[in-house]
Image (cartoon, rainbow, N blue to C red; front, side, top):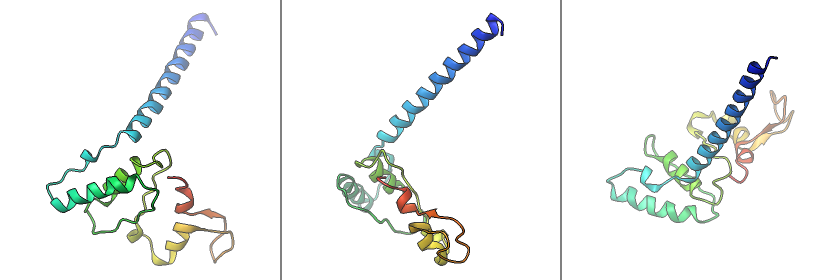
Length: 133
């Protein structure tokens, strides 16, 4: 390497390190700055739900959110998650309607190798993947 080439390599390495640090910072800021104002509504019923979910986020309770398509279930789930003590854990989204009934249990809870025909490897379930999330 000549001096100019070495200098360029060092500069790129420092730039990469700086960008990685910035990405971590932005990711942390995004995951900790969820505001209830992200949910836009004029519906009194939805406003009540937002108030209730703000209280739920402060508890350690597990939450099941159900409703029709397009009603804001994922927004509510994210708001609860990112305002809870579990915000640093993973947020795992599950669309149960998209899972065939025969695979639902295996997807949610996982399975051991050989537990059923086709279970050739150990598979971690979504509940286990969401550990502390």
